[in-house]
Amino acid sequence: MPETSVNPQRPAPGVPVIPVINWGGLSALYVKEVRRFFKVQLQTVWAPAFSALLLLTVFSIAFGRSGQKVMGVPFGAFAAPGLIAMAIMQAAFANASFSLLVGKMQGTIVDYLMPPLSSGELLAALTGAAMTRAILVGLVLWMAMLFWPETRLIPVHPLIAILFGLLGALMLSLLGVLTSIWADKFDHNATVTNFIVQPLSLLSGTFYSIEGLHGAFRAFSHANPFFYVISGFRYGVLGSTDSNVATGSLVLVSVNVVLGVLCYVLLRRGWKLKN
Image 1 (tube, rainbow, N blue to C red):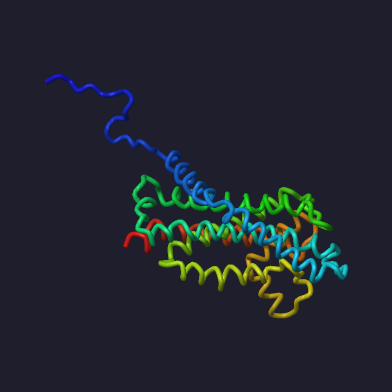
Image 2 (tube, one colour):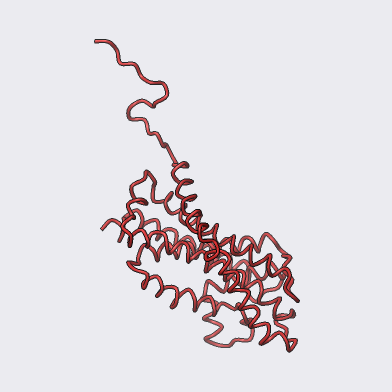
């Protein structure tokens, strides 16, 4: 019998086509997720930035007109970095908590599970897209606040501001993925948003310094990881903070590692995804 010729363009049988990381599949899912939120950018990018500007307007009118200063700077300058960091975190959570949930509700979850993507690649694409949306919201809000009276948004320590912004975006992206794995309907998503994300955001020191708190309230602030994002980002912008930056970065890295491992394990097991 004649020998069967082997096509040099194809690998031999048994040789893996994707040896380590499926970069093509990972980037395709990432682009898909980015295009999904960018098609409605008025709602996903511009609206959150506008809402944060409204908050700054209201609180500046309420507290800033009297000349009140917080940590030695005008109230508007103090609140602006916190609002940017808060908007970054909320945008990251909103994007990541929607992807798998809408797939489960519409019956298209197979589009995430069938492609040749590992659990790590799937998680990287989802969190990467959520962080992209968060960064866009933060940039839009930062550029708008550059023209705001009494704000000083040229970062004193830009690398620290970027570090804490990324750590906060990653933390809420992972929390969003975890929520979308657990949730079966939009009510479940709204429960996490209304009873976890929103309270921790508002009680994170965005509009006040914890130096004025006492007892249990100060202890709660130090147990709130959102506080370290706000405080660290504010230090990067203003050069002053009411917490230890090294401690805050260590706390955030630890929380991100725990959330990342938990998301990876649940995705690998297919919990509430392959039923």
